[in-house]
Image 1 (tube, helix red, strand yellow):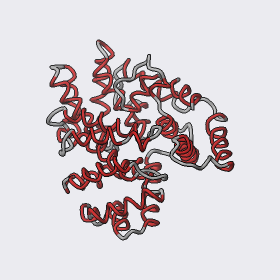
Image 2 (cartoon, rainbow, N blue to C red; image 1 turned 60 degrees about the horizontal axis):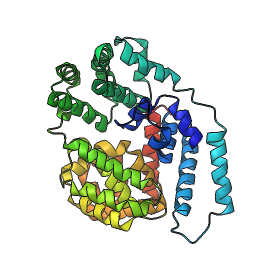
Image 3 (cartoon, rainbow, N blue to C red; image 1 turned 90 degrees about the vertical axis):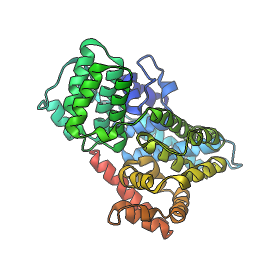
Length: 376
């Protein structure tokens, strides 16, 4: 994992921060302090450094090590599991070459800040066919530059943002559309006329003003949700989850639309748990919140966001989490909250019937569709 973190850091820590949507990361940040084991595996898969099978095996190995290291079991890690863990590390990490595939994108990222690129430029043409991950990272690069750059680099970033928005808008997940609206709101609040004018031009071109939040509460909710997920994927997660989950729930019962994806992912992840079980104190808090989510917000999340929520979808391919999801879907009547002809409706309908095998199959199909859309 140390080698993988160092490998990812070769792309630049600011770039890594943009991929993680972490504003606190800059070039001086330490990879060991920024990249958790889970984040490292996720980014390696998104960048094509590790294929989907490798990422699956590495995640399973990480869950095994985390579970047995937590001290919550009297059993020991078995010989077969140990060998499979070592094999996965050697095959997919120690035996792999350094990052090569992302060099071109890293160079394109630098162009975004050093020249104003025309819409018919080959770089933007390639972006149209790029994995969604790189589309999202392009946007995050430009939005981060709006906040941190000055002079010519800021001017180039703003020009390229206006040019890029119509290109990236259609495949862009709802979460990232909200980030554009939030950037406009922040520019307005801080009196940044240059950034506000450019963002306004871009949003007008894509009719995106519906994504401008009324206030900046969303940032507080998003950071709290990120803390929940950090605890969920960290060591001794069952013990550490309740604190940040209670803090997130204490921010208010009305989740800002711009933070809905992060908050729903956090609550559902804690409630569903992992293949080893759940943190019961955190799960009960999450369930109370999920019961209070308005139907319109449930519909919005299920139809617009769940299809790109790889975190929750992966849980629905695992035996214990999928069983808890079926209980939740039945209790809350989730199938009644979505369009009756969608893939999500079929998944929820199977969940309400407690057909875990069918739910797992539907979730795997949605994950495969995400991979196809990302060019993998």
